[in-house]
Length: 376
Image (cartoon, rainbow, N blue to C red; front, side, top):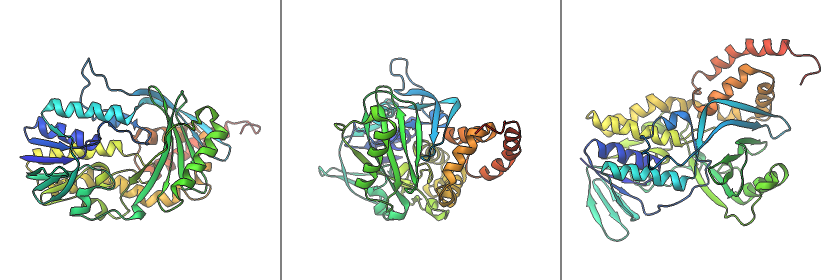
């Protein structure tokens, strides 16, 4: 099989790695390496488990972080000790590491921009034209492959992330932003801190969102204010509460993975795990002789149901007062803290979350009954 993968981020590089290792002729088209993204760069344990082994002379360039502080944005905060570490790294360095794994597996990297695709044919801006049995879009939220085969994502399915990379160090922080339906983050990378904020695309202009980020960082984390750092922004896609928003990601001769497939968490915006997972599911489907359409069905069953549930819950999660209550309850209850930590690690999905919270309530009540009246 001859496969073209458009985009060399985590989804594209990992798919190229899997397909090349399976014996396919894989060409990965990406003109943009090396590049950075204003995301946190966080790899949950389940995402780390999907990566290929790191060679002794080329370790994965991430920093291990074992705690995360949640701030309600209204005065309350809680620190979570994570049972397993989260890896945080520069996307420029991690994406380059993944591309090296794909090339070592036998994939070919063409550093050209793709200008057009059609069934079986790809053309670059230099005039190169090649034919392939399968075209895979791994080219982000504004995917050319998606626009060609499915259509563009509507604004209602997009969030905006913006921020900068600050010199120095910090703890890992998620701070909710009341009135913005989103949150800001501090993610400590090996040699700098990712500072960012996200919110639905249509909620506020990006300039206003950056102003909110700058104001809150100036007040709460003044050492991370870096007026000289370049400001970044990028789109975060997500599915809707309708399963059709995931079942559309493949058809005859094409498939979409990662952000191009809009496989990101509608509540947190986390997409790296789903990028890696979708690449593994597509490769496994093709390895078993399945058609791309079978990949879409498997993606829905294996990870899409949880994303659809998250889309259904998003409005309730960011309803006024909910995140403040969640942080306040977590401060008081070890049972609630365990649920929140598992959400951070990806060990607790949204399907079944409500049942687990109900099971945690007796523990919460027990914790409350043991506190003195003067305790918060």
